[in-house]
Image 1 (tube, rainbow, N blue to C red):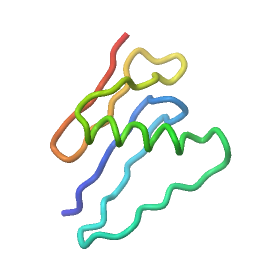
Image 2: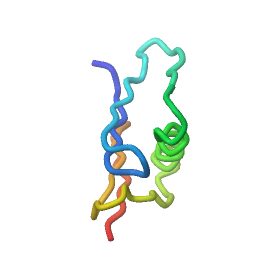
Image 3: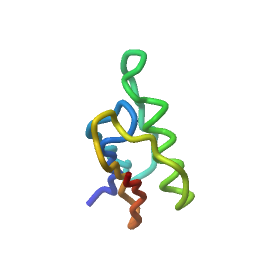
Length: 76
């Protein structure tokens, strides 16, 4: 089964699942300005480091990034 990274309620991202190619490769994020591409990359970086601050999506109380066997979250 392929690894995944799930991002919820972080910045402009309501919900996003990134599938990591099993045999390596490239994952492309594309979308209009303000869609959350840079925020998604920052969330993946926070996950890979095991630390960092995640900006919450407006109107939410918690955000999360999960994958690679580790969670990163922020609660107000």
